[in-house]
Length: 330
Image (cartoon, rainbow, N blue to C red; front, side, top):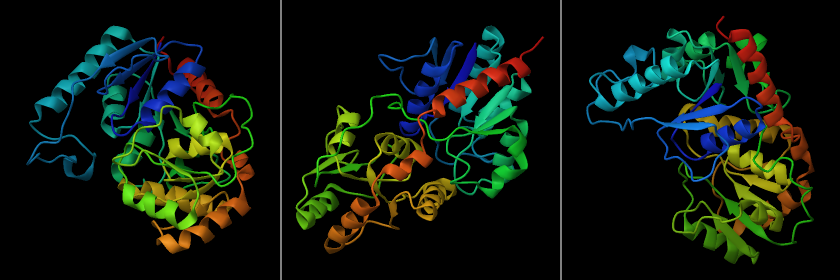
């Protein structure tokens, strides 16, 4: 059995974990403080105690060695105790950590092999370096030919670049888009874009516009259908959103949002260098949108095959199978 720690921020970590679990032949048990979904592909779900930030948390980064290990935090202690209790009782052959330096270190200290999911951005700080050193395997869910960050190069021998992986991989080939239709697709991890911005875009271009993941707008009930209906997608540079846009092979305008470690800006710069999407530093003035969409339409979405060839989840699962065999206790 393989464990999979799922970070609670946003929805991308859970989406990726679910996609990987569905591709694994071995049972995968989820470990998360997220509520258990009504339907999921995991063999089990372990609900971890919530660990909300507390005012005045003491020495949360342990002098710079870690990211979040506050002193005298009941939630943090309960969370970590539950993980140790589960590992001792379940005896996993491997745990995927997506993502937490502290969880990776804790489980490895109990003798459990860990596979750490890498993230884009500036990750050469002592805490990230510790996690990559402790990991039996590192998984980078993007293609190395497009983005090869310097911080991962010391760990290249144990890193698998899986390429992007999407829950929509393996679906029938996307249909031709509906000309002049626009999808603004943002996420649950926070965005600087407002409903007023979307309204101004639609008014300036005259394009029928659907917004999903924007504050005050309804959630999409069928993201794949929305993607297939769009000729151009305006999105952020989160790995999950990009995986879904690339799976649909849609022309895209990418607007990186502020995240720790410059995560989205690093990804967007790689996409820009590779010519996979139109990348802008921020939401443009309304009068600029017609030219921006024309540039995206001209670029098209065929280049996304370099980012997502449809086999990312299978590569991820194969790496876990290999790593579990190597790292399994006698």
